[in-house]
Length: 194
Image (cartoon, rainbow, N blue to C red):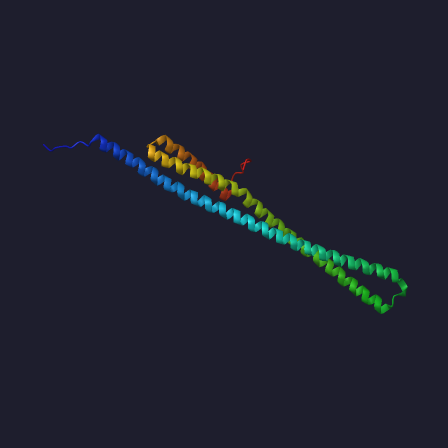
């Protein structure tokens, strides 16, 4: 009859602990990957927000320049109209013709600046919207990072303490962090407190 060797109970306990440790370590590595993605998403949304704010400010400055030029042409046109009215019949025909040509040119320029500023305003508002969207994304990434860091620490503690309860807590916080990270990218749900 063949001899059957029974495993030592201490060895079985160590193998069980090692299996738990390996599983938790593998899952912890996944937590770290999600944390890196959340950090990258947060950094990107912050950069995009700042860039959109800068570009929006530039567009509004450009808009202001167009408004100022429009007002300058309007004032020159009004001054010229007043001069023509004041001079009345004493104005020579050639001078009147030149003043009317100048008046038409001033009107054309005023209209051009009015039209150009409308396009600039649309672009500035579009950039402001982009800024606001990225501003809304940022808190989700920040909270996701915090929860994922907590889950990494708790998972490490669960390895040291060989505590499945601690690991499940870490898993729960990591899942919540993952959901916040996904929401940071997609903005599927807007949470009022964020």
